[in-house]
Image (cartoon, rainbow, N blue to C red; front, side, top):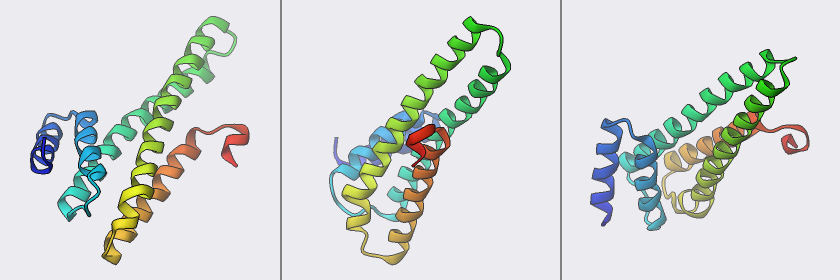
Length: 139
């Protein structure tokens, strides 16, 4: 699939609210190594914002349930394991985005506006990682 087809598929995925597919398409566009247009940059951002947003929301709900089930060991363990699964997905997605930013996007940004956009994005994804980090990971 060429770049234009991937962008079109990403737009279609956005309309269908299939953000994982949208992110996958835009990741492939980014990995081609060319500087992204404003439209492509926004598609990438929207895709990953929704992919991560869903996991962050799930994480908050499950964390709350885990805290409320104190005293019920089996339920609490189930909630903890599920929270850890969501955390793992979140970390993987955030690390994917941070890798794209460092390897392709920030380096290729020729306009100050794009560079600022990507650096803000980088800060956001480090913040998402920090939200779910525990203990020594927070450092």
